[in-house]
Structures are given as structure tokens and as C-alpha cells.
Length: 155
Image 1 (cartoon, rainbow, N blue to C red):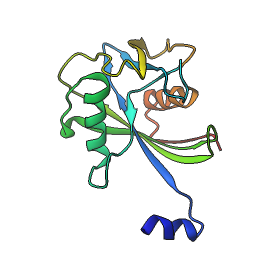
Image 2: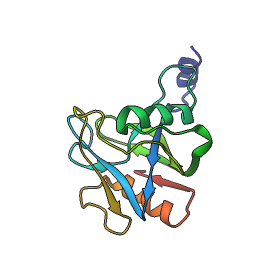
Image 3: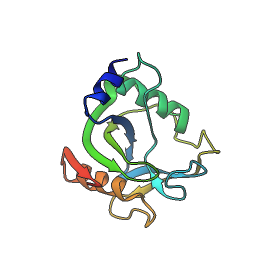
Image 4: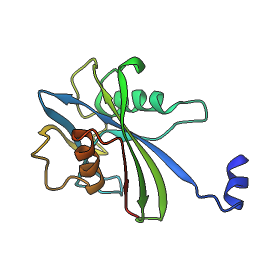
């Protein structure tokens, strides 16, 4: 496989992750992680990874939005607003590229669709985030507010 060859050459593996940013009435939607083994009890955006070799990043986000919070989004309504190169040291040392997309429109009211992974979902003031917001998510929100398109975290 191509990635095995790439890894043998000493190039790092980078994992892409997509995040859904929904804004309504100057509030942002956050979900509290539960029973996942990563940052449980802390707030983040609905998010996920690619499923299979044929899915694009924007398609992955549309799928994750439906699976996690029950909203339907058209690809044309997504806008990439921030990219973060992140080093995640725990539980393993990984490099990630986080892509944050705003959905300008969606259908349906967000609700918890995966209660085994999320125990709270709510709209929060941009300047009043919960204290237990994951730090790199807080950074991404600040970058979004300031229209900063790229940042790095954890290096």
C-alpha cells in the first residue's frame, strides 16, 4: 500500500478529522463527549473521520452531521473556515489535520443521536464557552471568531 511506502520513507502519518460548526442566534453548537475514551466530559464540535476510501472530507462531515446530531446538510452549504495542524500526544503521539466547516444552512433541529458517545448538546455564547471545552476546540473557536484560517496546536 502507498501509505506503508510513505511511512518507510520517514514521512509522518497525518490523520484528517472534520468538525461541524453550527451557529444560530450568535450561539455555537457544542456536544459533550461521553464514554469515548478521549476527552470525555468535555465539549467539542460534532466531528468524525473518513469512512472508506471513496468518501471526501466534506462528504464525511455531511454523514457525521446526520449520524451525530440528526441534521441534513447539502455539500454546497459547507464552508471551510479553519484548518489546524495538531499534535495529539495522548493516548498516542499522532499528527492530525483538523478541518472546521461551517454549515450556513441545515435541515432539522440538532439532537443527540448517539447517546452512548454524547451526554449533552447545547448552544453556547461565543464569549461564554463552558470551562470544560477541549482546549484545541476553544482555540479553533477563537480563530473562527477572528477569521484566522490556519493555526497549530500541541507542538
